[in-house]
Length: 180
View 1 (spheres, rainbow, N blue to C red):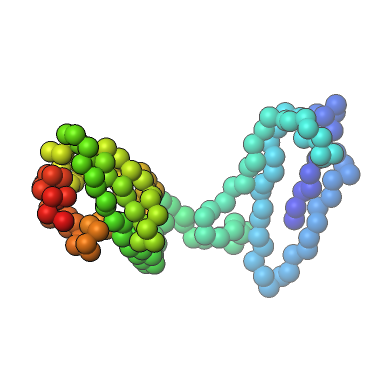
View 2: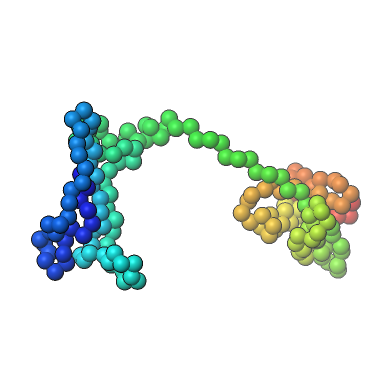
């Protein structure tokens, strides 16, 4: 059974609207379901799509996994949900795609001007770094600039095709760019 909206006339509260109807029938061989929900407010919200707002909240009692029934005997406790959630096997996250970027560096005084290029040869980003700065620092700057949402496994390469491996992150940029 469902008690329909606007079961009160605001001017006659707390007397309910007698025109509200209960809908539904019960079958003898099927458990009865209960529904308790509605909008709780001090005045009936307008149903005319006007722009006026009414303070209130939507209320719907129940449990996460099934509706409430008259013949309900199951205890629904936090422990029951925790046990159920431990048995759920979530699908593994989709692995990240790889993105390879080429580093093209030109010396400029005591700095390097590093252009970060896509595999297609277009410039993705550029930065000025000190000659004594470390590869790991540059790698983090590039990651923050071109993949801030961490969607890719980022790999860096030099123009000659050599990969800039993570194990060399403590090496200075001077050493990296002078060897290529």
